Length: 95
Image (cartoon, rainbow, N blue to C red):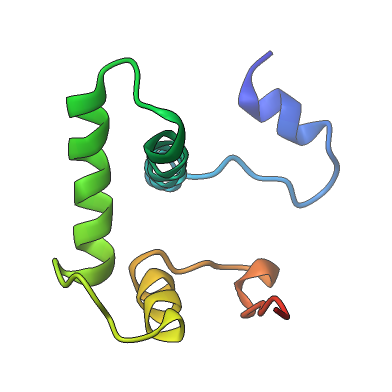
């Protein structure tokens, strides 16, 4: 089933995301996979995965190892990967 057909079946307002947004989502998913693998062990094309994730991290923090706080890092992520639409409002998780 084509993406457009699947989204159309979900009701009004469902649009096909631009390719750039899909690529960004995939890059962030690879970063999360790499984060998970760092605790459980790497497999597959590790050099390629780590290289891709390094680019994601460079986009977030510009190569700095420490942004000073969790809030500063969260803001850097939002700047590097801004959301649009109703989900764009900041959502803080109570700890």
